[in-house]
Amino acid sequence: MLGSFTFILHTHLPYVLRHGKWPHGSDWLSEAVAECYLPILGALERLDSEGLSPRISMDFSPVNLEQLADPAFADVFTAYCDEKILAAEKDFKLFGTNGESQFRPLAKMWREFYSNTKQKFQGEYGGNVVTGFRRLAQRGVLDAMTCGATHGYFPLLLKDANIRAQIQCAIATHEKHFGMKPRGIWLPECGYRPRYPWSPQVGPREYRLKQEERAGVEELVAEAGLEYFVVDGALTRGGVTVPPYQPQAKKLREKYLREFGATGERPFEADPDRSLAEIYRVDSGAPGGLANPPAVFSRDPHSAIRVWKAEGGYPGAAAFLDFHKKHYNSGLRYWRITGPKVDMGDKLIYEPARTQEDIELDAVDFVSLVRDELTEHFASRGTTGIIAAPFDTELFGHWWFEGPRFLESVMRQLSASDDIKLSNCTEAILDHPPTRTITLPEGSWGEGGRHYVWTNKEVDWMWDVIYPMEDRFLKVLKELAPPPFQGGDHRPRWGVVDPTLQCILKQAARELLLLEASDWQFVISTQGAIEYSKGRFEEHRAFLAALLDMAERYAAGYGLTEEDTDILEASSVKDRPFEKIDLGWWM
Image (cartoon, rainbow, N blue to C red; front, side, top):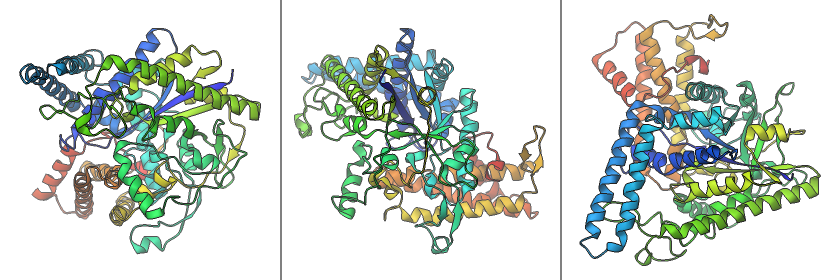
């Protein structure tokens, strides 16, 4: 046996339910369910039903789980599928009259795709796709990980209390939906910061002048009882980060290179004594050392680049469905990529039957690469290794329509392999127990390996807003909270008993978590839905500021005004994840 391999899929979307539909809003979530989550779920179920013992690790961001399980989303998704079915039917009729009859089989394909998707969603999963993933987790197929509550970027949050709240909310939400505590956590954007006297490099000047000893992220992970997380391979072994390629990140890459030059920022210091095929424990200097330092899986750049690479990566094959070209009548896609630099007007018709051979060849190549890497590790170290391949879940199905079938083909081949074990992170730690504890530098898997995506000139102003709001929330909570008392289960409980004040502060906590989401900086930096992101950010800021003002007035003995009641109701209707939010998470 040479070692093990695991896919790690990062499953996250920002909170878009009740915040618009198209082009920015709930259609994002519906697209992900139809094109990614359900096809991947179906692939895993097929492999499992055939007795092939598929294994995979997937994290589900808590804010995504809350949307997927919201009864309102079941209606939203059903309506979305109905719209797509109707659009395909209209195309089918159009192609019969406009001389484009060659597209009619594809229109029929789309009608069947969305009809089957709707039927499976409503039937097998009862309108909640999380149900299917929960079954796989209970069967041991899926190692279901968690993430930061709203994908807040841990290295830049103002206080350890803000990170703790993101983690504690994550665990509680995961337990609610999966019926078990997660073993591992995906650090949002793979963002890591070790212990050191920290001061923010962005935000208002008064905050940048203050320095505070901050716990390493691994300390907060261990404190919460989580056992492992994932980082970019450049943080573990050094060198240059290979940023995860996504079609919407091309402009970001160009902007980054203009700012830093062709070589980018300085590479991380190399440590040839470390291997990316080895699991380590991490401790950056907790006082007295950590009793149970969490394990860390390192992103393998070689397998990543085969998939993410803009030109020459698997998703760019000529036969695969083109993501960008859509029909004017319906928005459905009928063309194949055709070639790396083929003009939109010259794209050829998509031929689904031609894609399977490419998928199988890509899977064979991928497995061969994994085998070569594990062989090299065994030859140099004398031990078996583990190759971890983390990707955004949206790549498989949304950006790359054939992606779920690629995953299935790779897992099918590895299930039949005699020398590579298809695994997940929890099993891999048992098979390859870490024997060394290391330190890691600060960084992420984003462009440049550091914080550029979330701290560039287009988004720095956001931290001028976030830091004062984080600071004010913690101060208001401290001022209005009596000393914690012991609950019936002997855990400290936050002491406010006034139900109205609790309601106000809990909604403020939701708005703070949503304000902290790293998505707003990411979308602006990648030149995506810029105005939508700015608007969402401002709305959460305004709600949070109004709710904190309201809480202070109410605690001082003033009743709620009609305007107060309207604001509380409006924010509670629009922003309603984390029903059982606990203010003690910040205390």
